[in-house]
Structure formats: C-alpha cells, structure tokens
Length: 239
Image (cartoon, rainbow, N blue to C red; front, side, top):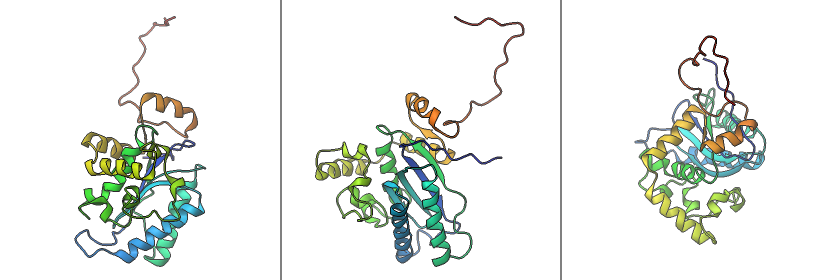
C-alpha cells in the first residue's frame, strides 16, 4: 500500500507523533532522565533552528509528540530529522525511529486546545505520573504556570487559542489548568487519535472545505465502496 503524502496547509497547526524503534526504558523501569533531557533539548534546539512555532510538546520513553505551526511545508520534517540525527549519533547508533512520523492538521478555534490537553496529559494517560505537570519533559508545567517556559519557546509560541483563555498570563494558566485537570471527553480523545494515526485533518466541514485548495492531498478518507453507477440512458441533470 502506497504511503500517504504529507498533509500540509499554510498557518494550520499540525499534531505530530514519532515513535522510537526501541523505548528508552519500560514505564516500570527507572526514568531515563538524562536521555529524556537530551531529546527535549534537541527538540527545542530544532524548533529555533527551523523556526517552528511550538504550541505543545512531550517527550516520553517511547515517543515524541508535539503541536506546531510551521512556515514551510517541510519544516516539521526537517525538525524531526534533526532530532533523529542527533539521537543516532549520541544515544543509539542505527535506526532510531520505528517509522516516519504521523501528523494531522488541526482546526484552530475548535481543536487546538483539546490537542494541547491531549499532549500534556499523555504522561498521565500512559501511567508515567499522576499529574501532568509532574513530567518535566513536556509543556504541561509551563502551560499552567508551575514552571517557567524554556527560553527557546517563549510566549510567542503560544497559539492564539491559548491567548484567548484570559487577559493575563495568570488568567490563561488558571483556565488551562482547569481544562487540564478535567481532561478530555473520551469522544474527543478518540477523534484526535483517529486523525493523528490516520494522518487526516480534524475539523468541521467548513474548515475542511476551506483548506482543501491549499493542501497536498485529500483531507479525509475516501468513502468506502465503489462509486455508485449511473443508470443507463439517464442523462438528465438538475437545474
């Protein structure tokens, strides 16, 4: 089966995830802090180098996941490749990623905040920690004001949807902390993961129609089954 082409549209956030060929450690093993910190640093260095706006991120024992808006179609690929090259020379020789990364276009105004919550809660969902901000290798603590954001990803990386959470940093952090504590409804989690693993766009019909002329391929799966045949001799069209 042919691989899908990358799905990209200008100024539209992308939720992306790449998994490691071999985990750094099992969840039940001691946390490989040094390796996680190296990977986090390489990710943030790459964000600066490739001028990627990073809205949310997490590095786990088996994956890197992030939400970002890029200036050019290939910027996200170059960022992940840069991390992979340093991974292969410093931590593990040979193949470092299980496969190429998966990504989904995310509708601003509707799905950006849920995508940020999904990212920041991954360490809880996968049983690394009990609270999102307890995992140092993610954006969760900065989003709720429990830690300073890394200087490489200052406020200019925040998505406008996050800024609309409040008029001051305290207001925004408090509101997002409430959202993060509540988590997502299961249906939203399923929709995000379906779009990510299927490598489609996630949004309403108006959003999908708006970005379709700008993207490199279709934004949603084709309908199942064969196209319905037109009845023989039926050439009538509606006015």
